[in-house]
Amino acid sequence: MSGDELLQVLATLANPHRLRILAALSDEREYVSRLARELGISRPLLQVHLRKLEAAGLVTGRAELSEDGKAMKYYTVNPFRIELTPQEIATAVRTLTVPDGKKGAE
Image (cartoon, rainbow, N blue to C red; front, side, top):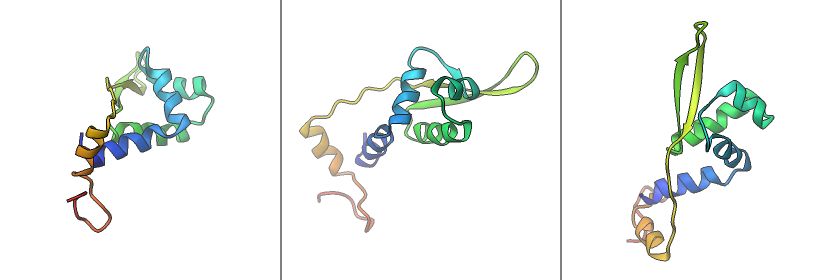
């Protein structure tokens, strides 16, 4: 995982709503409306968090048609494991993009 990818994943996980979403999806896939009700948050707020989780590669969304022809978007958690050691951080730092556009600790 590159330094930029690592930062994106860690920043994404640093939000309690997103952790709750991952926990709710850990056992089975769910569609947006039911997930919003289960978590007690609005659909627009849930969709913001789902987009961030999807951009970080932690969940995948897939649109499906219900039996009555209604489009429903289901989300599932992508398998992931994060193990950080000082050596892995040092390796990731070498690939970081810093604000001036240069790569990390060169």
